[in-house]
Image (tube, rainbow, N blue to C red; front, top):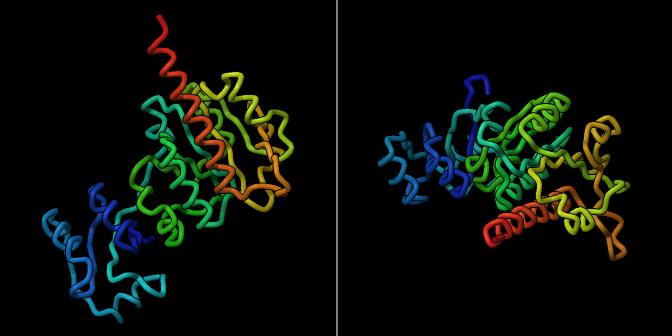
Length: 249
């Protein structure tokens, strides 16, 4: 990190970094990942062949799959992330588990979110486990890190988004908001750490606190599942609103 670079492990993450023009150097075992090596050379990215033992020493994982890249830090500010008039943003507050953060980032990408914001106290998105959990989505959408929560919420509102916070004891039911058309508006979702959830202070910053209906006997959903439900419900509401606007006489 001191050199403002981070390690990218695995073929999928390396492929996406390369496609985004964000790969500085590639290390491969001879005879492994030849397609990526050829693509890197064609893009002018230095490629170095190393033994499996050397690659293992460079990697964080036990089995680095024969390929490892080095990429520059992805520094995105809130102004840049919100400049394009986003309609769906995921905000992770105090989420310090890299696997959870990376999975939510990947889910946000899949749902069509315009940006992901990680607040102060959340994991660095360049963390190796987080990068691997994104499966390449780290290069697909703006990712802001280290943002003060109160400032982020204020600027999200200034950008025209309502701010909804997930809570098991939320005053509003997700299904009711979908049925009432509330989710059709540009929306930023606040998600907290899996064990503790959002703090009272974070919940107080939101326009609404929202609970996901649990119709079975499960006590709750984990963070990534809850984020998927909320983000996809909102993305669907946005698509329905667009369709209705197109067919309205």
